[in-house]
Length: 554
Image 1 (cartoon, rainbow, N blue to C red):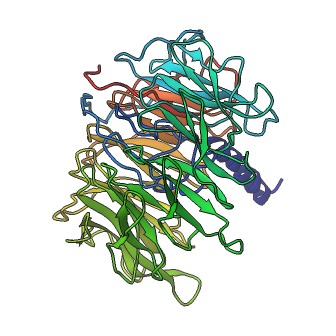
Image 2 (image 1 turned 135 degrees about the horizontal axis):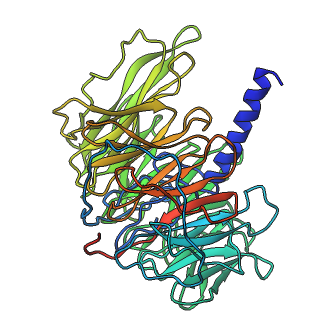
Image 3 (image 1 turned 90 degrees about the vertical axis):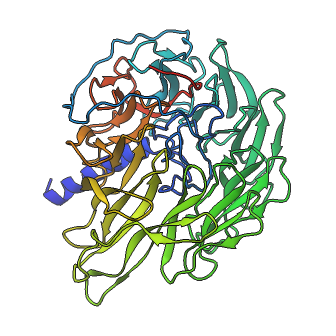
């Protein structure tokens, strides 16, 4: 086998693991519009909880709002976790002494994490995995779907007392809910699409899901108590990726197929009762993005209805849109500040120069404006812009607010052919724009940034080169100390903090191929525990912290 063939084999193996780690459909996440990533480890929130408490790949921390096509938001939680230095050494191996049980201890003040384990996504089984839960130290491991099996999509209820999952136990796909206080789950609805996310309403009384039971792919809502089900989209197009508004009054979802000759997609918003859906974005892009404000009163989105990408804000139902930006550049990646008073976004335009190389025309920058579009200002001062003679394009993207709104983390990536392709650096900056950005990490590939709940650290997961050298590191938010690498290799990454930041969960794949594991470590990266060590399944993924109630933790 020559070198080129070996590279193809390695890349294919990486692709298999990536599909395994990022299965299903997710719209979102600020960075992942299109099918929602079911395998990301998500950050849990204290009630009133976000509808994103399931394994859906949000970039939010407990005090931030994610910009996604499903437009789910999270609410603030007390930053009560203690901090330690980030200079600790990293352990590369860990074992778990957990044993499987049939009972689940209450969450109390001990964080618990759920995940799926079983066969790979290549399995021919309808329900190739089971949903498990364990304490953060690996103890108390319990199979929540024993005898039923599950697909890759599952979700915690906002209060952490139930899980929702899809099973084919009786032949056709059915939506089940299991209370952790009961031994057996119950059927809530028929016909859910097992590859689409399950979304609990903020109050935990309803579940939104996707089904083709009426012929087209539509959005349905099931009442958990009464088992009544209603079709809320009821259109002839392909609807997917539902998400609740923070108030539970509306649902947003992605629609494709309105123009069968293009890959265009739009975000529709419909009252939870299911009448008069509104095309909020009216765009012609393949990956629309939008998010409700933290209080649920406004819906922000990006559209190219004016010729290039601009940022708009509408009312909660998607009506009465107001244009906030007006630039010849593309304005993207908008994200609400935790209190909803400001919006951070990226703005820039890179074009192809004469010849084979990319060259900067207008460097992309991070901006902040008030939520009504007033007082826009750049927060990147030009100190990290390369010389305009450099032969690559630079994009400042994906601004993420710290939980208290005092800082913004963002990624700088390099695209196009040449020696710097794929380069990535993470920075933290003051949203007032009166200071220089502080470099906190650099590496390869695209990345996801996640603030610790107390704002002291960032967990950074990079995709690497085709996922082969993906990794997760913990860095101090002020740029001091040495980054602590937690994992590296195929399938690594996808980190998420527990509610109060007392633990960090992350994926660790390794270069050997499929066989992902879920690790939990202290917030400084020490004492990692493989909570999947006692399980036989090669695929362990779709991890999500169990939502915890407010109050002291530790």
